[in-house]
Amino acid sequence: MSRLHDTFARLRERKEKALGLFLTSGFPEPDATLPILQALDEAGADFIELGMPFSDPLAEGLPIQRSSERALRHGITMEATLRTAAAFRAASETPLLLMGYANPVYRYGVRAFCRRAAGAGVDGLILPDLPPEERGLVATEAADAGLDLIHLIAPNTPDERIEAIDRITTGFVYAVSITGLTGTGLGAHDAVAAYLERARRHVTLNPLLVGFGIRTHEDAVRLTRHTDGFIVGSALITLAERLWDDPARTETERLDAVRAFVRSLKHGTPVPG
Image 1: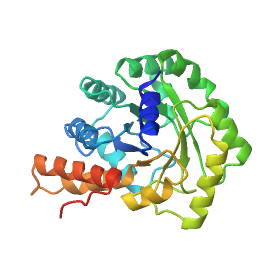
Image 2: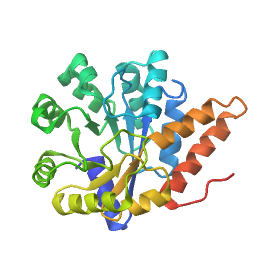
Image 3: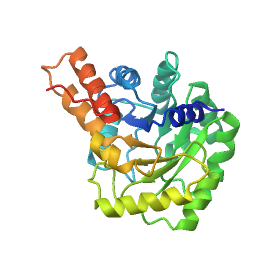
Image 4: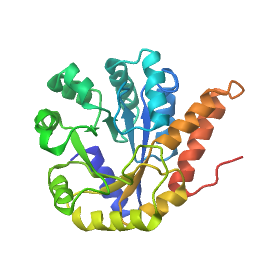
């Protein structure tokens, strides 16, 4: 049984929604990624997605695009990302996923990548540009290595396809809240709620988590009415960018602000002024 499965089981027993957080590897600075991951963990993240920087993303809005560009300028490679994952795993049992695009995985070699990721303590993969019909290119090697392979749905995904994705995904089904890019605003409340309610009816085998556009605890409360949890990426990236680009901030102040943000998302705890 995977760390991800165990985490969702514990949260269900506590009737608690899961909080997943995304951070790009090597961002905002190579030496800052690991301390931020540890701060997210300490503050209550239920799982963490470590982004694999890529120059040509399909689904990322400006904050995550900028984070990838910044990481690549710092020379962050797949090996550097895997070393960061291993360093995080050395001191934590919180589930850690790698999220990125298929091309770097193919270039690394799928079999070698899956084995190396599992050896680094990674629990699963999210590859948004890997369609379910092509999952065979990765699924066998991922399963052999003990990695979950998570697929996404969107508001325009037909019911039958949602059910098919629920049958093949492992870990959870990732419900994209909008038909747009990360970091853009949420759509009309009624439309998003209707989509998630529909998804909930058709996702019966896995936890259902919602992401894209969530910035606050209030957003999370509203969107998790029909889901098992939520994922925040761009809002964290934007905060980290502002904190680390402010030379007046100490490292301790920056990490304290990250912890406060996570607690505000998870518990609605006010962020200190």
